[in-house]
Image 1: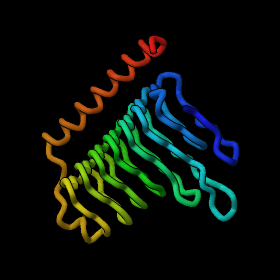
Image 2 (image 1 turned 90 degrees about the vertical axis):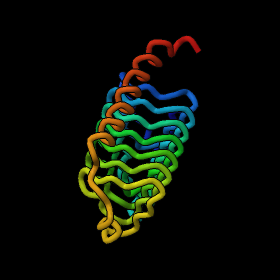
Image 3 (image 1 turned 60 degrees about the vertical axis):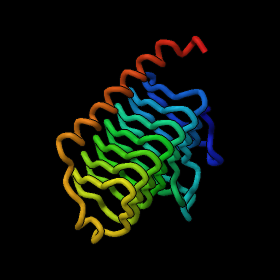
Image 4 (image 1 turned 180 degrees about the vertical axis):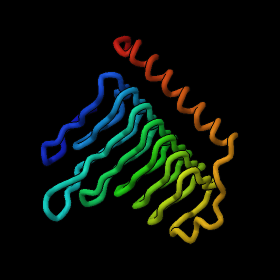
Amino acid sequence: MIRRNPTGHLPVVHDTAFVDPTAILCGKVIVEENVFIGPYAVIRADEVDEQGDMEPIIIGANSNIQDGVVIHCKAGGGVTIGRGTSIAHRSIVHGPCIVGDDVFVGFNSVLFNCMVGSHSVIRHNSVVEGCEVPHSFYVPSTANIKSNQDLDTIERVTPDVASFSESVIQANKELVKGYKRIRNEF
């Protein structure tokens, strides 16, 4: 469902993107080309800052927002999801937040008030808040990263982890094509 927010902003979705009919996109949301937005995802840009303004939620080209993901912004802050990025099932990305290109965010993870560098991997059930994850970092499953000092124990992304992330992107690009092809069948 595509709907306006109280300030009148309406999502803008590129023609090549696929948004599942059960997903909700509300407000100042920009979805770029070849994006897959899965069932029951909620992407909502509707809170304003003290001046009545808000930054958009931007989903970069070739990214995928999987089933049950919630993306929202606090007090007009924006969220940017880079190009070729995967946000896996039931994750929460709460702005202000910037997620770089070619990032993988695992199931049930939470990102809040943070920046995640390109080519990084945040594994399942992890929390990242209030810090800046550098380029190509690997945050293991169930990690709780609350400061830049917490990052001192974090490893770089290995080739096998990068390969997995790339395979998820490829699978979801194919889903965009397939669902766009059959969208009038249901």
